[in-house]
Amino acid sequence: MTDTPTVAVFRPDDDRLERAADLLADLGAEPVPDPMLAVEATDATPRTDADYVVFTSKTGAELVSAAGWEPSSETVCAIGPATAEALRDEGYAVDLVPEEFTSSGLVSALESQVDGARVEVARSDHGSPVLLEGLENAGAYVHETILYRLARPEGSGDSARLAADGDLDAACFTSSLTVAHFLEAAAERGIREDALAGLADATVGVIGEPTAETAAEKGIDIDVVPAEATFEALARETLAATPVPKE
Image (spheres, rainbow, N blue to C red):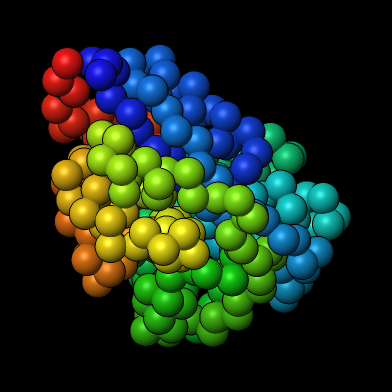
């Protein structure tokens, strides 16, 4: 055995997975990169008649740029600093970033402003209903544009095998869909219950309460939900809560 904790990380199979693995390694972990999300672009762009346009991911920012979206007078909102940075990198101005980097945080930041306004929510096909319902309850006319669909990549699930074998010390889930896809991959291998047992013995960190709720519904005990909804906070706090493996 090694005193380096083995930590599964679930990100799209692009530079985000590589950066997440590098961060875990820098923090002293042995990362297990297991891509649970594949991005399928729709080539859609936000409607042009909106007063507010809300983005919830770096991927969305990059895809609207590639599709040629040109904003006019809309108030552009980003769910958090990573999304805001991606929008600015693509040449877009960002007018609002909530203090809490979640769907609920966006609702709190906008609810006093959007009564009677047209709000365009541009995101994936697996977005939380919290955002749409919260804005509608605040009096906004909400339209959702699906910028991309999220599928599970073929061949994913190495971390499920490690969990089932008792060789996973921690796991970092970044969305409800990564939880669902992890369990789907385990089920395909016929090891779902063993993988759940392995997670029970590991430290499990998640980003956001919706992810925590999904995990709990599927029988996964959660150890860490960082106050800051970023992968860096998730990685640091999950590792801090992970016991050093015994020799």
